[in-house]
Image (cartoon, rainbow, N blue to C red; front, side):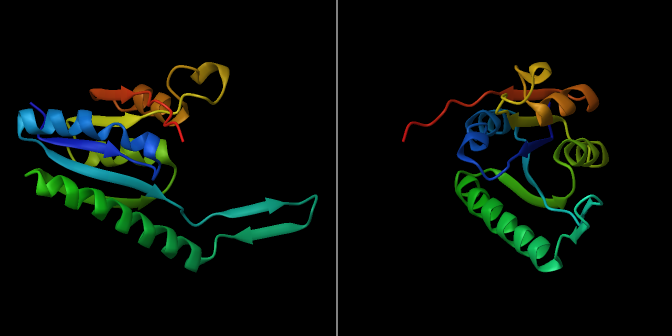
Amino acid sequence: MFKRILVCLDGSSLAEQILPYATEIASHFGSRLVLLKVTLHPSAVVSPSLGYYRETPLEEIQQARDEAEAYLERIAQRLRKRGLAVDCVTLPGSPGETIVSYADKHKIGLIALGTHGHSGLGRLVFGSVADFVLKQSGLPILIRKPQQVKK
């Protein structure tokens, strides 16, 4: 039913709580998992009143990409040991737009993501990225509000 499942991760343990659900579905349908982490993209911060202009340094962008790739690969190795087919993708950009664009271009059958669900009244249930993906993708979406891990 789902040939490719896009699992959206942000590097947090909360986001990773979607993994058991996505892997169960992938196991059941023989799906390929695509782990996606959206990283920093070149941007500029401009504050005319403060006379401030700053571009994101290329070293900072590359470091974020390298860390994201290593992070996804650690997760992928654990999943591959369980016999799952896993790809890792890091892309620069805005999370919601990047997720929807990637899913559209790569024939994703299901998008799986966790949501922190704590930003703004209109996003009490889902959170801003999940809300955007839900409204814009037109694909089946598995959303889970993670449980806070007690320390």
